[in-house]
Image (tube, rainbow, N blue to C red; front, side):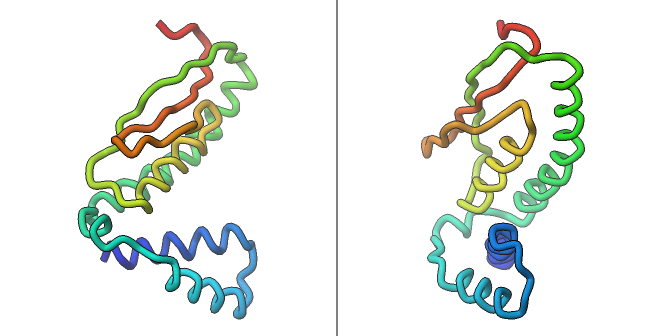
Length: 131
């Protein structure tokens, strides 16, 4: 099942990048998604539950992004902070991509670096000075 979810993620990214749902582009996207190499050892560790949680976090990030955008307009955020966020266990490259997407999608945060040792470097803007 995780192989199918990984394939759907790749195809979704293809459609978002090309912004074209013509039959020819769908065929090209399917071929590209099949030709992109995939690591079998990494993808076996992810469970369906990991994928469902990551997709749910992506859905929840949409209203959160709107709330944060309004918050930034109403109350200025003048302080910056770099923090370290641990990567959840059993993350495949597709799940790491979704994690980075969710973090970066919200206006107050952006992932500046992914460390293969198991953490993200996240840049935040904040209203008050971090302590």
